[in-house]
Amino acid sequence: MELNREHFRAIIFHNFRRGLSRQECFDELNSLYSDKAPSYSTVKNWYNEFNRGRCSIQDESRAGRPKSVVVPEKINAVRELIKQDRHVTYREIEASLDISMTSINKILHEHLSVKKICSRWIPHNLTNAQKKARVDWCKEMLEKYIQGTSKAVYNIYTGDESWIYAYEPETKQQSTEWVFQDEAKPTKVVRGRSTSKQMIACFFGINGHVATVALEQRRTVNSEWYTTICLPEVIGEIRKKQKNRRIILHHDNASSHTSTQTKAFLKERKIELMGHPPHGESGRTFQKVGEPEPEVVKYPNIAKFGDTATYLATKCCQNCRQLNDISPSWRDTQRAPCYLQGLIAIDLIHMFTCNKR
Image (cartoon, rainbow, N blue to C red; front, side, top):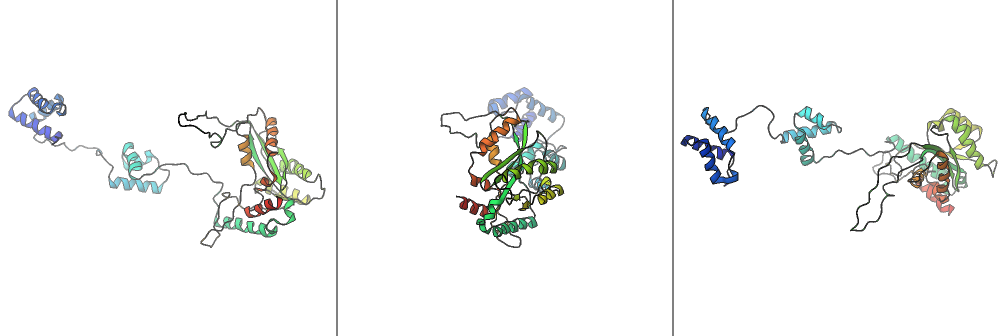
């Protein structure tokens, strides 16, 4: 049988009633129970309590919070707080329920098994109407261009703008390397992207790259630049061989692309617009409104800027001029069919690519 504190207190009380001194009581306990015996100060304190007339060996009730608050009521209370506010903090829970940080941590991780994680970043959260608009647009394009067999696809040109940095750290995927069992795990120093950057606009057609227009350093795109510098240069490149070539332009719904000035410019130059559906999660399946099963209609990112950034990762440039020199070196290595990504719906792109090959 293993003795607890109350058992030792009973023995001390018995020795007190026997008339043993504090030292004699301590020596007797120490000889019988060795290191499990209470200390001399404990024996002394209880002798003092018994001298004052105390007869109980139970702990007296004290004010304040109980030793353990990890009880079903508190666990349920914490669960409700989290359901009401997914961003609730430890301090807010502590203030609301009057429990310690240690108890909160135990409830959260051992009883509720919750963890706080960052939200996944997605481009946009589309409404049902926007999802339907995307589906309708894709169907319209497939019908208009006869599943990609129409010759009009050779008149479609797409473009977009993006920041290119003088130094872009390599991605996690790029830094992976083979390691044998007896080798140490690879490490790398965390480096931020460079503050030196250049805004560029790239335009592609079914045959590949058409033009890259660089913006002055640290300036942003507006209607004035888009209609007086960017588009005239792109149109000039397209019409170098055929002066009256038909142009069907595909760009997104940015303000510089949809402004009155841009629309007037395109109308004057007789440039047709292909239109653009609402932005959303690229390459995802959207559920057609009113139907129980999702309809597989996908729409990828507008351009190859993701691959451009990957290519530029770890390539250091001293200025924006060097950036403009590096981008074409990536651009020239790409096969023409890859530029079709971003033109229209994935099914139509597949048809374009097959025809091109």
